Image (cartoon, rainbow, N blue to C red; front, side, top):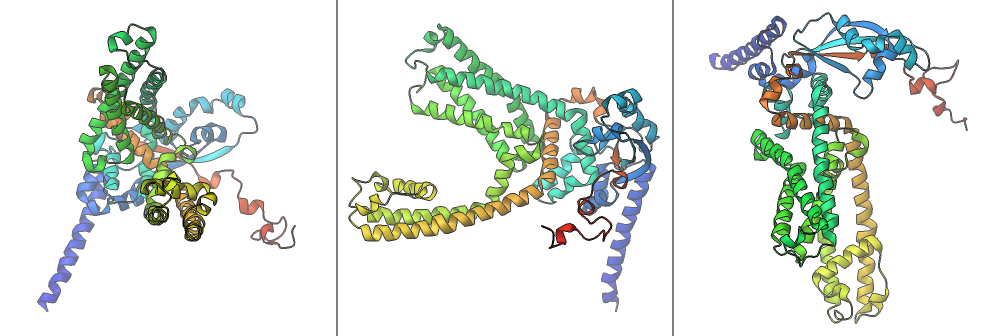
Length: 493
């Protein structure tokens, strides 16, 4: 009997301890002591996400404002944020001061094209103190690391408390710093483009001293040096990111692309300025690769400004992750057919270069798959019957079955990506914010205390007071059953 009661008592004690910890945490949140995010992790590490979901936000109250004053400010994110050192504030005067220019009657009458009405807005506060603090003292950095460790879902970035912190940091300082970073990147990109265009027709027999004696050579070397200088801040950012996250968390498609651009830029400068193997094709290949990668990296900046249209690389990464094993099976199938054609054409390899080597045969299979083929090749070979049967089988298996399956899988994958584009957008913002925050010097942070307030306050429109059109009501019968839609009436043509 005593042995059976021990586990029960142990579970009760554990449950009581957890309940006590939860009550202590609640008292800490209410009293204003020990209620930052780090304390939340240390107190109840297994319930952090649940706490953010259930108790991360608290409504302070509601008030009414002209819709033309608040709706233009809410366009895009759907919320307004402000920082404060106090959790409980006189919220209505604070928010009215923030919207003062839009509340001014002269401004409202000037901007309004139609009519102006009243709309009810809700004032909320993020209950966690110092949620917007820098680095791992705040909320974003620990959540990003946990997400990168695959210990939580991407949906965590859609929680109201987390979304509020992201929007506050983005609106307050991160967007401006990212635009500054983008300006430096454009210097790097455009300088390299000038170098590439001038390098195209450069006299490779000239030494460096001879090259800089010409006006064209001076511009070439200057643009090359400017490109290297423009790359320097990004190298510093990459080093800081690796030190902060470690190699495992750092490893991603964007960071690998960045690393490739750094090595390519250095290698191009060394080979070109030293005139080492400048006549070889190696330098041309490096310049071509760098040109492609630099233009592709623009998607890194675009993905946090307009998620539905510009997140090409993120979308491609998600789609490829879903179809990678199918693509591997497709490649292996093409390799099997390539081997079969290579053997069938062993007596005709001099006449048909398409099957002269196994690699040429595989490239021919790829060409057949995407652009079709000519039957003349198979009629003129030594074994036309077997070759024609084999190519018909190949086209049916690969071009008809495999390609249509691939299109279907990619379409389904793209639909799933599109469904989660809002979460992906917030996650991308959080990553960019944390990366910028990692490299901002401490003295810049100390001179801008308004970047890191104790509490984040949020203003949102009350959904019930919004003057929105509901599609079901718009299509319902007038004077009839409001729940019945004219789309269900089979007699309507």
